[in-house]
Length: 224
Image (cartoon, rainbow, N blue to C red; front, side, top):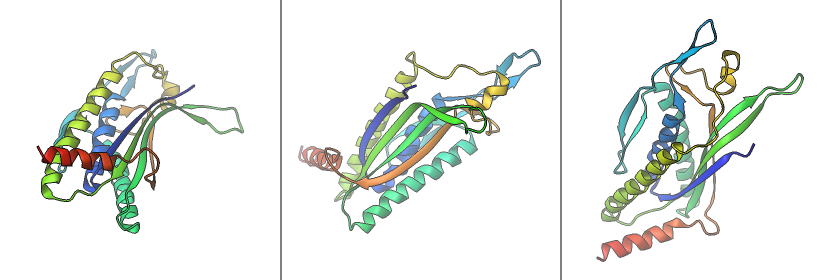
């Protein structure tokens, strides 16, 4: 099975990375999360509700919706913050040279294998974020770019919502013995599809050098 893959590319200030990752990943997880399943003796089940809340960003002009699960919020915050710190530390080590990195949210299902072989995790949807850290020269540029990033993220959140409403593959609803092959049943209040977050860093190479394009955009805007 080939996993659906989507790539978003962005150039950001270091302090915006954690919020950008969180806003997009929380949006994805909100659409890929159900309430807890409650099975009955006849095999039928009911599905609980998923709470949600609005979240305001500090360094981007954006408000987004996320699951009101404290456990989910801790997981995303931990990974997004670690990725942000990794990018910013790489930039410091290279004395300001632009750095890029990638962070992915992968949804997968588990396929059991016969003994003695291990189970296999099969991805069915992957969302990749490629980000470059950039440095702005003035507070005016920061304020302007704060608005631009908010507009960019809002467009991507709308795209995610539209994508989720299109017919596409998701694992079929399992019976109770196979529930944990499709869903993460470890949460006390929600039940997301199985997912993992992974990240890495690399120098800015090839065509991915959005910082130059962004600086040109800011220069043109400020000259108006």
